[in-house]
Image (cartoon, rainbow, N blue to C red):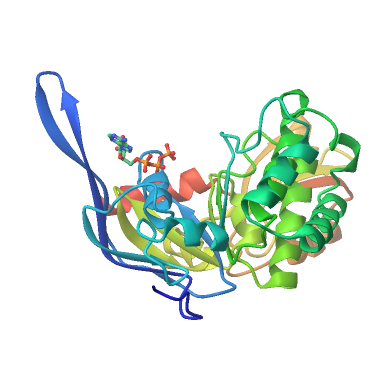
Length: 322
Ligand SMILES: Nc1ncnc2c1ncn2[C@@H]1O[C@H](COP(=O)(O)OP(=O)(O)OP(=O)(O)O)[C@@H](O)[C@H]1O
């Protein structure tokens, strides 16, 4: 039997997965994942990003033993995902934003109990961990509510509790914040950050939300048509495409275009100059510095920083590769 090691949490070598699909009368091969070689160390938080159909879900299925590779090798927590699937289930927790692993008609409390017994947690461990998750994910008010009656934000918190109940070493989250309001997103991110720092949990998440990546991940893996095209930090990724941020400021009175603010590019003005948009490169300045220069020139009443969309960064990277 293979013993889980304290080596990498994820290690793949030339991993590939094809699908045979029907195309009218003919059949063709779709290469969903190709020559994927990645290594994720314990405690890392990795954003696995790419456009629709890039191969993210297929990779997650290969990592968790739902799918068999067509080529190459994969080890998750030192185990072979398909052959050691049962043992792997103790090491990994998976959260799907769009699917539930809770029992739809049961109260949240009962789903957690069932999962605790599936994982053979033991009474004391079950109580301690459940109490911890109920408190930190603020589940108390709906513990007795059937899952089908929960709001999306409540359900996601319950999903996360279910996936993390057995304190897995690796948590894989597939679009965890999709459809959530700003506050729910923020709470979930704060929880994941705390969980990681408390327990050294490794996080792998797929998302189209730049905020998730910015706040949660210290490393990005970008895939295009099944292959890895970038491995590094978000700042590095933005740098490769020169992604700018946009500062939107509301001013106390109509103001001529603020075209001379250092390290910015004036994009436009509205409402007679009471709202202005300035682009800046986060590599050469910060929003705080831009604001300091602005407040010498005009009285600010409100502001917002627009982040480049991940889709936009990905689109630009893809465009530069075609
Ligand atoms: N079971 C399957 N049968 C046939 N083709 C599949 C199957 N699963 C995935 N594919 C194809 O493999 C490619 C990668 O799909 P995958 O779902 O992994 O992408 P994704 O990056 O997760 O996309 P999304 O962001 O839309 O979820 C796509 O071309 C998809 O159509």
